[in-house]
Length: 161
View 1: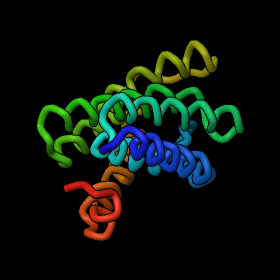
View 2: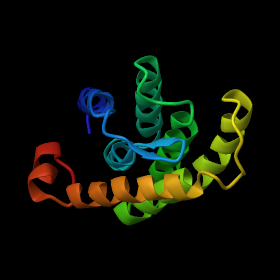
View 3: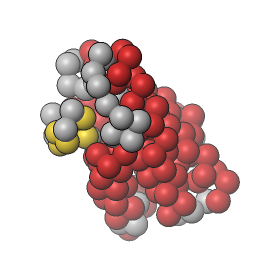
């Protein structure tokens, strides 16, 4: 994909991620945002790991600036996007990228989020407190992404196979 097209698609995905931020699911103290995980997988597959992480960072930053996110958005989204992108580059499999998003966000991102929640946000939580909410959010968004990536019209529009 040409660099200009990658930048344009990245901008569209970031805009969607920010515009749809009010569509989060409160699970305990976490604001679960399945569309972030959808964007992570699509970014990982179509744009690569660097764009996927950059998109996740910018969406998290803008959501926080606009008061629609929390500090937990950073590790959850960025680690999942990175792992999904790296695994897609290595295996060229959308399914493996999706598994990377699930592990990256649901397990690694949730474990990194616990100390942030405790030390930076001043709240109490166990180390595994966010695993279930992050895994559920990631599973929903990743599942939708897997369906969208298989839509023939979308493949043709984005010119990928």
